[in-house]
Image (cartoon, rainbow, N blue to C red; front, side, top):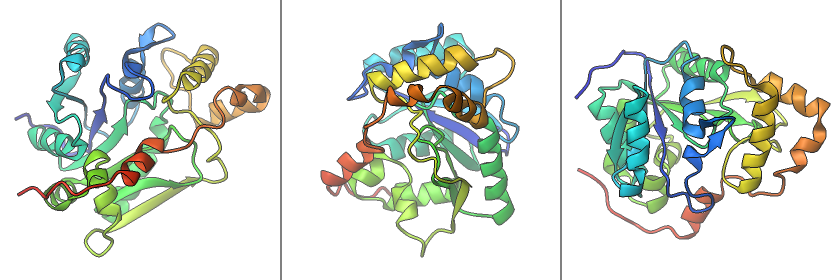
Length: 259
């Protein structure tokens, strides 16, 4: 067990076994793995206390642990399918009072937006708070207290609630005080995440144009680029948003609560 700062611990879920784009988190994007960019951009956040990469115990994910060790990044290994269980035990191991949930397929995450979300969470003493409204796919972030995560871990029973960490919390406003941070409007048609080969080609072009070593490009920089070069948006259009979660709902089944 490791003691970390009382500021939120960013836990990045990452694995090699993506259904649609296997190995995506370790694909090289302008000379660095996608996971490197996610961690690097999180380091520009002012309001997080530590960064942890939470991967699985599957042999194929040894490469993620090896990368973390080589780059002095905290790593935790847990369940492949029960991501809620993985998050809970990672948060417990690192004694996190609150947890920022990040996925490793969002290399264009915005550290300023994350800091604003964490400030909103603290200011209103929410049990959980997430980016909401019409924001670009790929800026996804949410924060929760350890007590909320622990209760979800104990009580969530459906497969979709175990695979995606926070659905149980959002489905129970009677149990949790949940905030919605609506930072952007009318931008939901933008796709900056990494699930398909076309997403990778889009991100390559964005990073080649905007990446700087000492300054993270922000949402405003991407929007300005796309205003100058609107054809870039055609590269990865027509993909269903949150396809993985929708697929989980369609095949939902009860798996049993934890005690």
